[in-house]
Image (cartoon, helix red, strand yellow):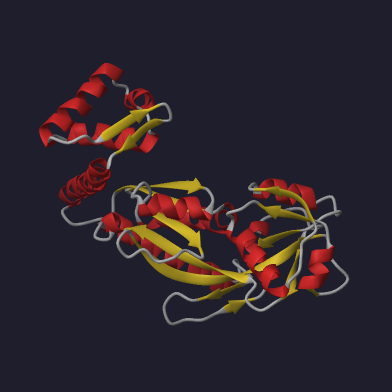
Length: 314
C-alpha cells in the first residue's frame, strides 16, 4: 500500500465513479482500476462495489477511506511542520455552509483564515444542512455548519454556536409581528423538506392544529427571495438569508411563537479531531461567528458557544 493508491482510492469514493476519478486525477481508467485491484488483493478484501448507479465503498472500504484521509492529512501537516520548523496550520480544509449562513459568514471567514493562516486553502461548499452534516459524519467534509443536528460522538464532534430565530420574510406588514394564525392566512412559498425550517414549521403547526396556505415549495433560497419580491407571497427564513440583500422591499417580521428558532452548530469530522489545520480553522469559525454576532452584523440570533450569551434582534 502506498500514498498514491490511497489518493486514488479516496478520490474514487468521493466522486463515486472510477471514470470521473480518472479524469480528475489525469490517470488512465485501466491504470486506476488496476491500482484498486492491487489494493484489494494486498488487503485481501473487497473495497468497492460497482453498479449502475456508480461506485460505492464496502464497509471495509469506508474504514479504509477514513484512515486514508487521516494519513494523507498527517503527511501534509508533517511536510508543513518540517518546512516551517514547527507545527503550523497548512493544507486544504473543506467547510460546508447552508446557503443562508453562507451569505453572512462565508466572506468574513475566508478573509480571517487567509489573514491568520496563509498556508491554508479554504474550500466553501454550499448545501442543505442535513446533507452537510451527513458529509461530515462520513468524513467526506472536514467541517460544516448544521441546523438542529443530533450529536454523533462516534462520527463527529458537535459544537453549539447560536440559536437563530426564524422570521416571516416578504413585504412589510402593518404590524411589527404576526401570530401563527395570521401567518397561516398568508400565501406562503416555503423551503422543501427536509429543510430544518420546513420541519420546524410542520412540527409547530401540528402542535397548534393549524394548516398552511402553501403556494410553492423550493430548496433554493434565491428562488424564495425572488418570489416574495413581488409582494404577493411570503416565506420563512432566518435574518442571515437577507444579509446584503439590496431589495429593501423584503423585510423580516417576527413570528409570535415560542421556540420558532433553530439551533446552529459547528460539526467536525472525528478523523480531524487531532488535525492541526482543522482544529485551527474550527476555532476561526467560532471566533468569526462570535464577532459577527456581537458586532450586530449577524442579527436575529442568540450566541451560545462558550459562556457568553448575546441576543442580537433583527
